[in-house]
Length: 509
Image (cartoon, rainbow, N blue to C red; front, top):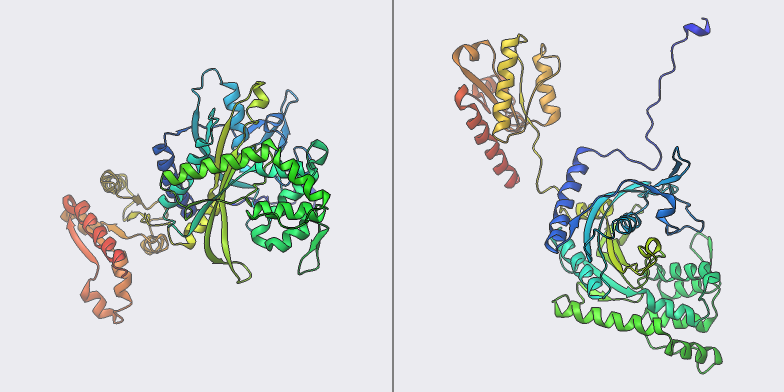
């Protein structure tokens, strides 16, 4: 066969790595969840705003978590005017650009929320995707930590609105000023120590996972895990390590005795404005939340909270679910973080040349949805499959009549569809209804039409009874789950059957 007669190569359908197609059940679950989140945000006086998926790359900044190189981890392209644009990796940096660009028109404090997809050009893994949804709330132009306290309270209210009861979650609060003060005191201030500081912060962030001893190793020479893999540590001296451990555990510093190193750190901390401000702000947050009725069972001060992003400048907070789930290895583990945030007073200022305080938090929608499914908190508003209007004749008059029946159901708020496949094999229509899990089928053949009637099949009840009746004669005589009504009454009868089905579901039949 000559080359020009070869069959054209079929295009292979391939989902890009690290991305997922979302099905109806997940989309509806997200819609149900985000509606409840939105209600809480609106109640707190926040308004929606939407920014585009793309931003100029320089506007996003060099803040991507777990990245040691500028702009690594983002999807970028060059526009026709040779400017680089990138898909947003979070919703905060685009908000900072929006505020700066519209600063003269915006009323401060600017209290806003938005939901949307963000993109990370990272290696995909189990539960780690390159596209995922976040739901953020931010207050720009609010300098006092009362704004941070309110964010924590709003996070708590949001989790409870989603059905997560007290005891199954906690909002943990820290202040980066405390850690910054300690890092400066042990000699890790300045731009040249940025890499070592990040290693220290990541080590402290592992406190829940590895405990104090594991973190000590990561702050020192390094840690070898059970598989033998070695993680290089921050290389701190023993006294500095104990100071950090004491701070994050809120313990008195006891190690190091009266050594010159210990005394030097203590003196530096005593004079550290950042360190003292940090604890003072945490005390104020604690007072505000307790006065508003939010005790430590809901919001608690926890100096081990770090947060990965480097643009945080003050209070940071994390929403953690405290119930156990079974992981892929069959082990019981605490579910963990579903969102967090903090104060980022320098982010808007990059565009402005003047200080613009801001604080906000982000919820990981997909992760929170997984948690709610674990708790059985999603799907309460079950979506019923459509009533199917079957087609018995293909002429224009009959098609118009079937469509009229379909529209009559829709006008009464009932999901309905007219069969659109090959109508000539009626059995295929009922098979389609079964696969769709349709609750009811509407049938009108020649006899029913002549009598001005409609046949209604309760497919749910029919399926149930077909398991109880095995004899064909009994089935034909029983005529179960099937009624014939006048055309004028068929919508009312459909409503009656749907209501009975809903009652059966509520009773767990």
